[in-house]
Length: 105
Image (cartoon, rainbow, N blue to C red):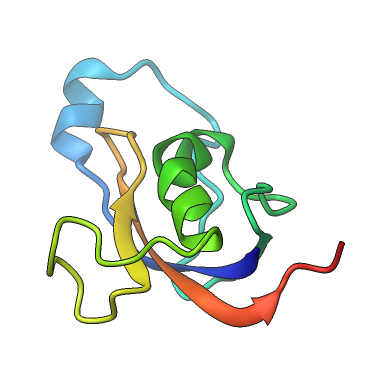
């Protein structure tokens, strides 16, 4: 099983939707663009957003076990995926890449 690198690529905020539909939230998202997390196989990295993990964990699981070329040619790097979290108000895009390093057992 391989380690997986998760990079926070872009964070978007739809303030118009927040103003119209969301109840006030003091701290909705701690992700920072450029932040890098390493997943030991399918295990969620420490301090990684639980909601974002729900969106990407199937891809992380697949990549960590050797899957590649999701959706037949979608990504230039066949051992990667670009996934966004499921927050419709402030979606975050993550680049998920398989590393050559094996998970320590």
